[in-house]
Amino acid sequence: MQNKSMIVCRCEEISYEELVESASKYKCSARELKLRTRAGMGYCGGRTCRTMVDTIANLHHPRKNDEVSLKHQAPIRPVRFSDLGEVNW
Image 1 (cartoon, rainbow, N blue to C red):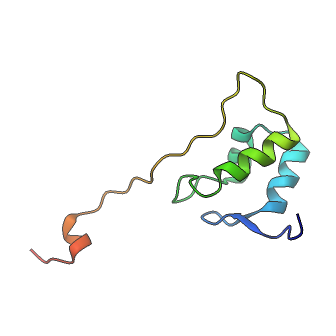
Image 2: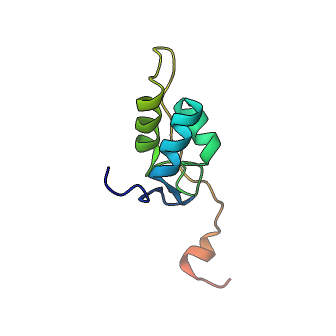
């Protein structure tokens, strides 16, 4: 990869270089890499960076057959309908 300062996780501002350094230093699984760097724990819940974090971790610490790759979940934040439509009741 040419640009090591490229941001992989936009929500937590985690760069490719940070992920690679952590993965190689600690021989992390994808879950451990996520917990160490917070990549995938931002507003999007890992929808944009989950695949890249999983790939980087798998390159430095190959996944065993019983390990599950990272999951993603929809962001949950309660919002009133009046806030969405800017209606003042």
